[in-house]
Length: 279
Image 1: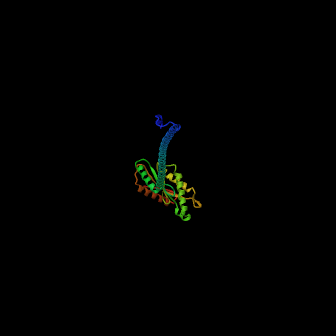
Image 2 (image 1 turned 180 degrees about the horizontal axis):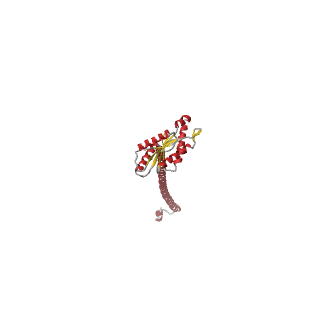
Image 3 (image 1 turned 90 degrees about the horizontal axis):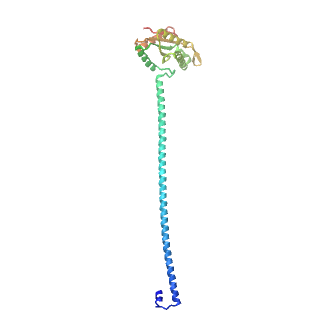
C-alpha cells in the first residue's frame, strides 16, 4: 500500500494515508501479540524447568533422608542386637557361675557326708580306716608312736530302753562332744566307729602317757552330766588301748583285734575303766 502510494499508482488521499497508518498499527499489534505469546511460552518453559529441578532436588533430598534414616535404623538394630547378645552372655556367665558354685557346694557336702558321721559330725568309720592305715605306715617307717583307743558307752542299751532311741542319740552326741573337748589339745583323730563305739588315734611317747590320756578321758565323761531327753544323766565309758611303737610294724587287722579285746577286758573288769592290750 505504501509502495503504491509512493510511486503514485494510487491516489493519495486522507483515507489512503490513514489506511497506511492503521496498517502499521495493526502490524505492531500483531507483533506485540506474537512477542507476548513467545515471552509467555518461554517463561512457562522456564517455570516448568525450575519446577522439575525443584522436584528433582526434593526427591534427591528425600532419598538421602530415607537412606540416612535407614542407616540409623540399621545401626540402632545392630547396637540393640549387640546389647542383647551382651545381656545373654552375661546371663549365661552368671548361670554358669551359679551352677559351678552349686556343684562345688554339692561336692563339698558329698565329701563331708562321705567322711563324717551324720549324728555326731565326727569323722566316720570309713575315714578312720584311712587314717589308721596312714598312721600305721608312718609308725612302721619310724616316724611316730601312737596309741589306738576304742571307747564304748557303758549300759547304753539301758539308756535306749529307759529313755528311748532319740534320747539315746542325744547321749551319743553328748559323749562325742565331751571327748572332743578333752582331746582337742592333741593332734587326735577322733571318729565314731559305730553304734555307741568311738575310736581315737593319739600321738604319745610311751604306754604310761597313753594310759594317762585314756584315764583322763574316762573321768571327764563320768563326771559330766549329759542331757538325755528331759533329764540329765551321768554316763560312763570303757576304753581299750593298744600301743603302736615307732618302727614296729603291725597289720591294721591285728591292731583292731587287739584293741577290741582290750575293750572287752575293760568291760569284764566292771566297766568305767581302761585296759591296755598285751602282746
